[in-house]
Length: 276
Image (cartoon, rainbow, N blue to C red; front, side):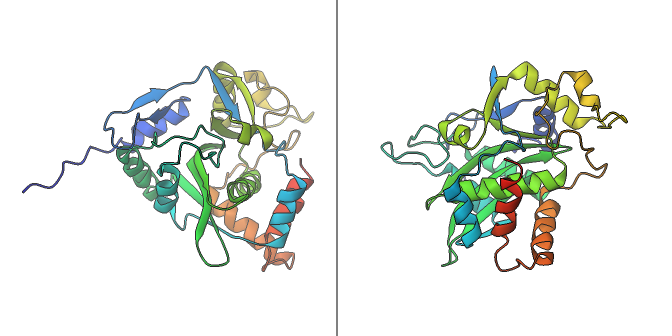
């Protein structure tokens, strides 16, 4: 008796080339071996200085109800994001609820490989019982992070994951947070929809050198990037951009220095309130 044939991974080099070109893969179902490449006519981004921190989410972060980690359970986060949802259940990330998933087994295996290579990352949210109750994952390169999917098993946990992601990416020097498609959930948190052509200009700027003249004008403006599209207008991005795990660690270290080791969410709330 032969073992089932496994589909070949999508090569990591091909995946990264696609992301750098503004394209990403999807599948028709969990068991579908075929993939198709998506280049949306309209693209959703979340400007890192426009994240909307509601009073209730700020309160949740300050109370430290959840423990948040980075890259501690990447494959489990993908499992949760790919899990079917009841048709009559509202999706945690605002996507249309359905019984299938665009995250096929082949896509998941390919992103697990990308994670092993240090290009794909996850944020995990754990409750006080040590259960994984929320999270997200995506692909990072240069000054860009492409969010893929998120999930929530308890109230606000996908929002908590996104808040930590935004705070970490700001420290990392990232200028583009790609959300792919606009949903009501993402829109409520500050995401906006832009034409793909404009997104590609932003993506190009995020992959090139970013320097500021004495007047504070960024080179990215020459590429057609509008004001507010890059985090921290008027401030030069550090030459050495941090990978998400390093930026996440920097957040924890900053919380420790502020005497907030037991509740780093207070630092996250404070940072986001000052920039939203």
